[in-house]
Image (spheres, rainbow, N blue to C red):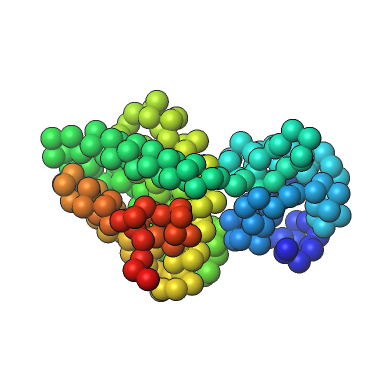
Length: 236
């Protein structure tokens, strides 16, 4: 459990509302692993720890529920989101299908995207690199999510993006876990390099090159073995 700390404007978060401060703190603890999947979130403990009232805490928990990071369970309170092995497998598989479909549309007939179309994707990649350099797991996880959202947005398919975003939100905790474990066993920049290779393949306009990079992107390599694809598992 993370060390108790008072929420205030001294946190360097400016004039954000108290609810936003609670969201920021809880989200950071979840994505950093300080709060584990399935861990119960008790209102009384959290209000005391953050020295806040129940109203902003409940609103923060509601927003985190919409982001797929916590689950509200009838008569059992709120818990950090926990997906079954089947859920993780199906959501990652769905993510893969949606990304390939999006990029197939974006690069239809060998179209090379204009630099302006790649701006947001490049910005997410740059943010990921900066967050990794300063060892900021929350900013890194958010930049990672943004990169994949912008990847799909290249298709210019609004309904596809609307279908994709809930999928990536539900997977955010597991993607952050994957990146955190990768950083603990290899160079923290390895994840950035993987995403740069994907960016370069997309910028080239060669869909075959994109598919080749996606095949080795390793979405689940560092998750527990039961949550990995057989092709992604590391040799024992």
